[in-house]
Amino acid sequence: MIFNLRNFRQKSKDTIRIGFSDNSPATERMMLEFLSAHFNIEITNNCDFLIHAFGQYGADGQYGQFLSHNAPVRIFFSQENIIPDFNISDYAIGFPYIEFGDRYCRGPNYLFYDSFDYLSKIKQTQPGNPEELKFCNFIYSNGNCHPYRDAFFKQLHAIKHVDAAGGHLNNCNTQPQAAFSAGWEAAKVAFQRNYKFSIAMENSSTPGYTTEKIVHALAAGTIPIYFGDSLVARQFNSKRFINCHDFDNEDQVISRIIEIDNNDELFYSILNEPFFPPDLPDQKENLKTFFAHIFSQEPTTAKRRNPHVWGPMYESRVGRSKSPAS
Image 1 (cartoon, rainbow, N blue to C red):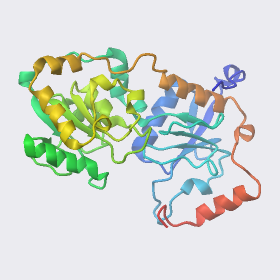
Image 2 (cartoon, one colour):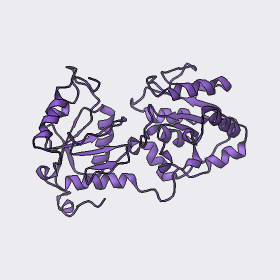
Image 3 (cartoon, rainbow, N blue to C red):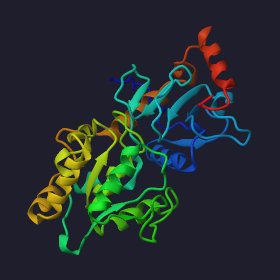
Image 4 (tube, one colour):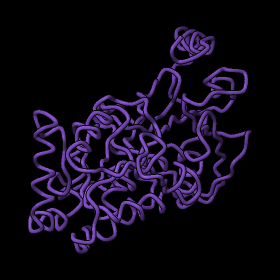
């Protein structure tokens, strides 16, 4: 996708008025840090560009508070496995591999984590001594997930002890830090550094939905045991982790784990693999260009959603809903 940026160089010194709605504080903080690094922005309720999600609920039980905001341009961004709705958002950043003119950019949430910047800098792991490492960790607070994750943990744990250190299924009387709290990422990665393997599985399984979980496990110098995005090998070198999607069943995955655990030479050979496949596009640069294209336009011309007939009707019906499940 080639974006029209001819006006952005002249406008880049202008203040870009940004607002947020329906996002968690952690999501807002990540996006704000990214935008502040590249653009001259002002956070204001009287904004031209509103960055929003769908999943946060207001005090009155309603969701979709962004629908009542008068910002001319809406930009969808969420860290959750949600497909953007272009009927009510002008632009979107998400996980799926989709194309929709100048309105969409793939931007998985791991791009906004310090661990991803670390991986991009060092390129591959500096291995330690496997004899000093514990076997495997499992750090989760959410039990409402794809059943594969819990089932796999229990099956592997029955064969060799796995330290469950999160709030969910905890079996080692320790927790690195509450998820998404200040310092959480660094504490989690530091904890994982004590292990050979990390169970790095998503809450759900959808093509393109890759989150920070595999990034944290790689940054810790462990071998991730991954499940979730069947297309994960597009983003990360499949020789550097165990991709459950490459196996027929859990027994085969566990056999591979035990084989690696019992063979230091094999363990080191995997750790020595680069994190990323060759010729991977610069995803953060793509995201920067995407925003620059949006901000290069006047808000009235940047608007993309349908303002006529079924556009407002659809939006009105969404606004009357009480919850995503209703």
